[in-house]
Image (cartoon, rainbow, N blue to C red; front, side, top):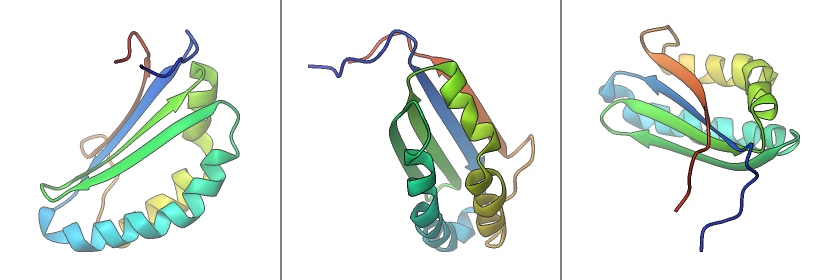
Length: 112
């Protein structure tokens, strides 16, 4: 049975791309960022779930579930994400430009 979510729930999807030859370094950096991102994100009001994955094809994605658009938007200004994680991932070659990074909030329409 699907989890009951508020009718105002939002799925936030972030995706960055990188040179696939950097895969091992990106995985290690992603695991390192989780040590400070997890507690910071869990403290935010409206947080429900977070998933992250790194593809050997050269992309990293983060998917989170929030109880509202307002709460999902907190990620736009979370210092640990906007500054520290970008610096740590940038140090291993991930670039954050309009062409390589996209972050979008989607109002939830259905679950399975």
